[in-house]
Length: 236
Image (cartoon, rainbow, N blue to C red; front, side):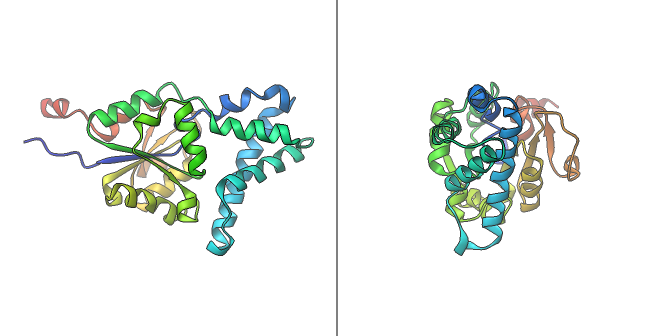
């Protein structure tokens, strides 16, 4: 009798892992002007800073993740020349309608074909994730959309990762976590997930991730890393 795979569910980070945020923002490059890449990078960095500060200062200071993201965007725009309401709304709209990476749908479909449940677990609001999943064509391939808002704590706080255990009703050891962010992968591994770091940009290894996580250049190899083909295993 074939054994069930150790991993029964897979949770994914969203932006940079399943959704191509760079392409979504690049569509508004003309509006942002010269140096738009730096503005985009600053926005993403400030969003993380704001999320981490509101988490570390305690639940009584929690702010909705979408509000934090908007405030981070306004900071980035003001840093580089000023924020108009129209620009803010267009860029926030980009988060709600990003394209999926070319490998995302096939990876999700392959995992589900092998009986694994799937979810997004991200520092974004559920409304943002729902809109993004629908626009990217991934909605039907996901069982859960898990927002840090539900935990009132952003990753890498353990309360955020616990959302996956609660949603899947599984121990962390039965869940894989996939992220393109090194800090996220390291924290997920420390929490107890079987972790895959998707190093899409070929950056140097951080946190000695090669010791605690599988490392892949994209999502193509993901099904084999998480749920190897049972027939292939029997032949080996």
